[in-house]
Length: 166
Ligand code: URA
Image 1 (cartoon, rainbow, N blue to C red):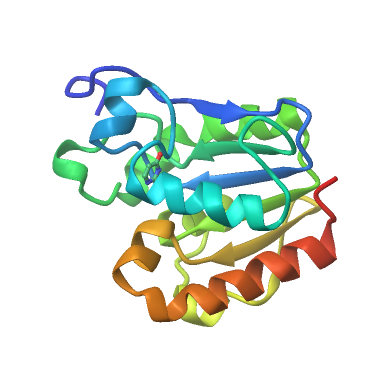
Image 2 (tube, rainbow, N blue to C red):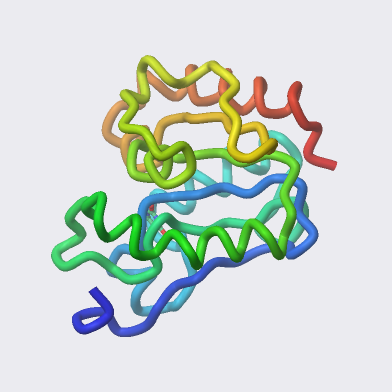
């Protein structure tokens, strides 16, 4: 995917954060600006973080399962997620978050190495090499399905109970 994108979008945020959020991959705006979640879904994500007292500058690090924009914003394939995984693993090793939050299915696949349905996986505590993982809806999904925003809020409250962000 590196052949078609403008730039790689590794991540943004607090390098000492207790929470690391993992999305799917950069979209058009992220590819232009080099920062994850700067489009409409990103604004919703910022609002959700603000509701638990976090900003993308403090307390949280935001990364994606893949670092290059998939052509036409398609969902990254399992092989592409696997190819990018060493970068995500290095980010986790450097930031040493106490909690991982998977935003959507591709992020859950990257972090848990399993295909999950978000409806079934959300609201539970998973584990990645000793780090608790919470799976929730992707903010772009929530923009299309605002009726599920309440569940995403419950998932953030679960995350906060497991590991207070600050
Ligand atoms: N959606 C994602 O999953 N990641 C981004 O960086 C932007 C939108």
